[in-house]
Image (cartoon, rainbow, N blue to C red):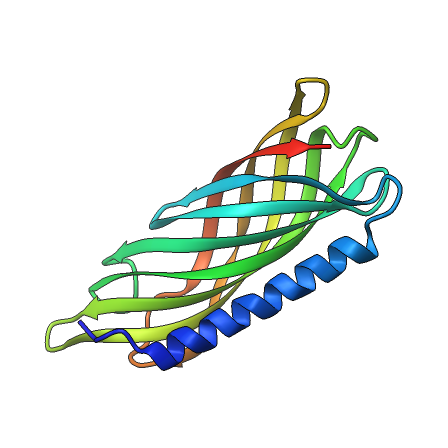
Amino acid sequence: MDVLNYDKLDCKLLEMKNVLAVFFLLCFIYGSGQNGLRSLGVEFQQYPTGSIPALRADVHLGVKSSIDIRLGANIFDHRDLGVQPQEEGQGFGFSVGYNRFFKATRSGLNLGVRSDVWFNAVDWINDTDSGTTDITVLQPTLTGGYAFLLCDGHVVIQPGLAFGWEVNVRTEGEPTGEGAIILGGIFLGYRW
């Protein structure tokens, strides 16, 4: 295994600070009336080779639509489903999504799109070698869910599914797995 590279870590932390700055700017821009930052919570997604725990904020744009912004971790074990016979790793990243609800209460069925960006380190082993590959993954998905409102509409429980594609847009090292992805997940948040 490689020794932790502090230069890359500093660069990734700087990228995350920029994402947070854009997030708070969006919250201030859309912060008046019924629009603006209206819920915070945690989201967990599971896919066949990994899991994504994340913090999520929803910014309401109108009566039936919202933007969700997530910061999270991607923990995976591709097993023998990747390019190399064994691939496992982790990373962090963010996503931005758009959701359209069919009810003005922003409950019930919703459909949307989301794009994740992950900064992952993949430890791999093949028949002759082993190493670590640093990748940046772009993961666009189509999403669908069903939002349940509890406690006078303040607590949101929203299970959902997402279908999309993982694309390694930057690879430093040997190639690793990418391709179609399906994710199941749940969001638990507080809405005001």
